[in-house]
Image (cartoon, rainbow, N blue to C red; front, side, top):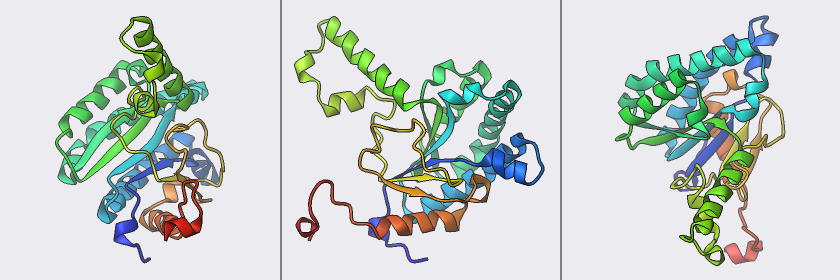
Length: 242
């Protein structure tokens, strides 16, 4: 598949959907679908790095996911710890820097510890930034940023009249991370599901029926090729882009 190097999105965000349905179709427990999805994370991260993507953000666990059956939530948290610990060596070998967004301090202690350890041990890697959205909700993030700015205004350290997009973005979990140019969702669902609502204001959306455990390098390249064939106008008309 032909990919134009200088038109590769700097930041791709992915809603990794369909693990449970993939497992159900195969007569397996849902947790095995999540476990199989780890392979796709490895393959997609490597493929993204190969074509020059700088940031890859994966929606790993939303605040709404706590409402799933307790056994599945427990298994997911255990899988996160196991995966992060088991992948640190390969992350360093492949130049992958691990980052996280969301209300991560509210994660179970073992998950939080493994996550922070992974972030610390990969902090000097520069090939690609792998951002895990954990205990994440865009509504939570926007409200949290609003409260931070309100507290500064109440303390007299911020003039409300000075609040602009840059100040607001610096109060978000994603401060310092460029907005995604491409958002991918697997499994055939065509929703945003409370993910990066502020940051994807001008992102191109790509929906695929492929379940996440079956999503690999070729599927990622197809999404990038679709992105490269689109005209991104940002409110202008086509003639202004020439």
